[in-house]
Image 1: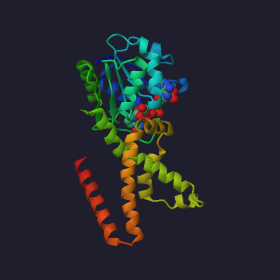
Image 2 (image 1 turned 90 degrees about the vertical axis):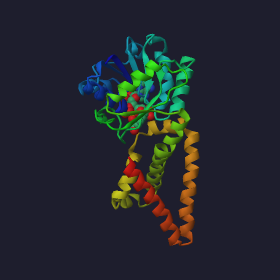
Image 3 (image 1 turned 180 degrees about the horizontal axis):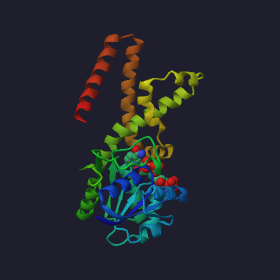
Image 4 (image 1 turned 60 degrees about the vertical axis):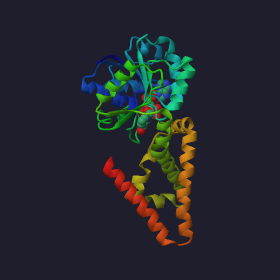
Length: 287
Ligand code: NAP
């Protein structure tokens, strides 16, 4: 049981973690921190946290565990604000969607990556954000990836692993560059495609009319284009190289379809679609 947990950033991800740990009886006291008093008051009202602090130094005081659940671009200033106020045995972890960027931010703020810092990423989310979107079941049966550094303390790993297991998540360890490449392909690229599709359609002359006729396929494909622009801007900036790599690969795939279409090559189109359908069906059976 974590005696005092401090979550900085009580939005979808931080709020859901707080709710899940509370429900599991895995925490005694939860302190929320952030920038906006109205949001933090709401978090107390919704019983997501016990109390809040706007001052980050005060928020982390005497905490056993501090979770950074802010957008990637805020990681460094937040770390700089708490650096001199963490206890000698306080464990620090984060939930950021791209891991090298967070490790670099922690390194820049602390001057070194503390041994009690455990980089983490819950592979779970929705297109909604803010504390009102948080729910205790978000992590059940979902994967959480920890990307330890060579000098990460084993006891810190153990505690962070156990915290996530209390939410019902399946915890895995992964090399940091592998994580960033895999997530660029399976999460970051799909978000870019959804944003690009909706943005380009919305600039068509008769877009309102077009959207009116949008059916299930459009909704399925574009749901994630409702995601938070700040979060996704920061993910792009933090994992740019890996995203550019998979974007180039994807462009080749789109070009193959375009070439087949120019040639009205039905056989080629059928082959591409069949291969994709088989891959997705296999993936759905496995997941
Ligand atoms: P969110 O719902 O928008 O919550 C972000 C929280 O961070 C808000 O409570 C916000 O507080 C706070 N915040 C923002 N800037 C801050 C700053 N400079 N100082 C202090 N607090 C600040 O976003 P989220 O979806 O939970 O994402 C949080 C993190 O989780 C991100 O790093 C993201 O990469 C990662 N993540 C997201 C998902 C997903 O699908 N959404 C999945 C896995 C991981 P205010 O209310 O005061 O603005």
